[in-house]
Image (cartoon, rainbow over all chains, first blue to last red; front, side, top):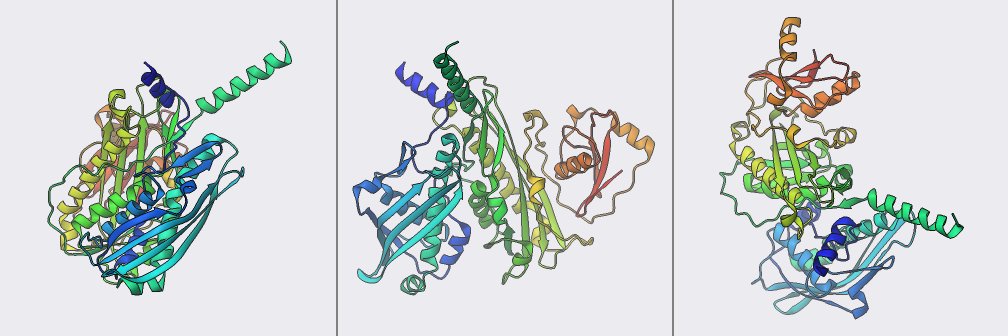
Length: 179
Length: 315
């Protein structure tokens, strides 16, 4: 009965999602990976447990993948590589990383802001070939109405991740390390 | 009524308005679980055009209980469209405009997809749509702008409460999956794409203006029919219909008609001419093209003839 009530509330009331959205690769990003050799994706850690949750006007957003945002980033990167046909679990080149900072700020009534910083590491045959902090920022139209601002903030986390990956794929050192 | 009671009433009314006017975000991304049959690849390179504006296009259509659903059709379906194209063509590229696509190295074809969606619900209490449709209309031209092929497919999805209670956009996902399967099959079966012969009538492929992509809620019965779009042969200019011919076409019942690839374009033409109707229906079809009818609220129908590979003309 309690479960039915909760389900009914979710269906009848405003659906305030509390997890990251399904990540969709950007085809424009995927096309940047054409020159890469096959890669495997290693572990992405989170520098601070406080990064496991992002506050959204009283709600909180957690990763919809695994147990933290490192898992979400790891899966998203794997999707990009898979779509580019560059994902190879047995490859000798591995990309891994650590989430250093991220935030979705929808405290404003007209504009939402997002930022993220990840340290990426590429190892070739267990030897480090690349280590760099890559950042991305984004802005979008927000609203004073929480029922609008919160879902838009959630949607934009995936888009922020696309921007982060775009910045990584555009990095000349990254390309050189993964060719 | 005390101030406290009045304030409480206003707050409740406001909350009701906020909740009642809710447009719930959903995604149209289909589940990838279905294994599709292998298709014979077409040995051409293709680029598809989706503009930045299309990727940020947010559409709102009806849900249940008076609520609506909102989503980004181009953003959600770009990757599945890319995958479908990759199954048929050995190399697929993306461009932000037709001009950009024509300049990409090695490209043989430029495909411009147009997406249309409808949704509805038979539930008065739950917001997820029980019925959803996705129409993928495609125009393909070579890099000189010569039209090579065009087609349209519509996928439909249905889900009842017992199914969507664990996956709210289930009807939409099913519609997307259905549309993409048909899209993929239609491309693979298009002889004109394998031959690469341009259609004799010069028809530059243009990206639909954003204003033409406003989604309108349409009852499921009015969704484009399942009949696949025919592979185009030599186009011929549409012949102007006579008054007696139009009178006969006007008598055809809409319930027995289907929509076609130019239905949306003709409906917009009719609106611009002052005709408000609910859909443009194919009343005749031959090798040269199709004739559409829009039943206007004024009582007088609007007709347009659409030659294959060319624009539509009002009759």
